[in-house]
Length: 253
Image (cartoon, rainbow, N blue to C red):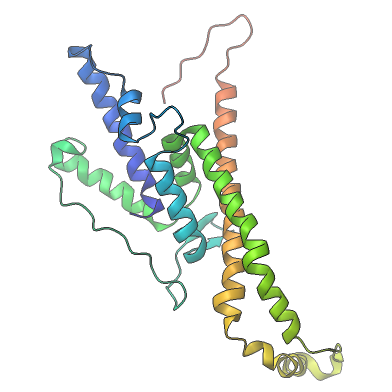
């Protein structure tokens, strides 16, 4: 699934963690949940600086979210506009067959409730998804994701964007004068349309130039969204520190 499904993964991991707590009441010799999760996540190697979840999140963010979504400043989330010829939907593996209710959240009604929550979170990637991503990856994983995004954006400038900028500069006319206001808005627009006719005919104006700017802007917005989630977590952790000489507060997750 796409990166929006991180909310579903968060709910599934919480259910697994709670199940593990209940099982350990009768089976105290069970391995720690974090050790089991690290083994399944392929993050147990001595020099393992990544994991299956981190690789999946990084790949979906760079290959799908940045080029195929549009950031809405008013709603602070990424929407998926209709696909175009240069933004085809990515190919994904088929979803697994239906799983018995007792292997998901216990019962069919609970599965239906969680499915409704997942559908509500599937409208766009926003702060809720960034916080779920932080819980699933941890602070180290989020920093690794932000570093991968920063490196990807830094590579866009010299390799992709600079060549388009040079081509646009060559397509611009040698001299453009500012038209007089007496011609009105329509006259001024017609003047620029006539002067930039060759530029409008540039084949890669939308598929190359503007699309690269979309990826660059989406990347900056995504990094800011992830940093905001980290800031919220840090502020919450700071609020749990006990007052000097007092007892630590107990707050349910």
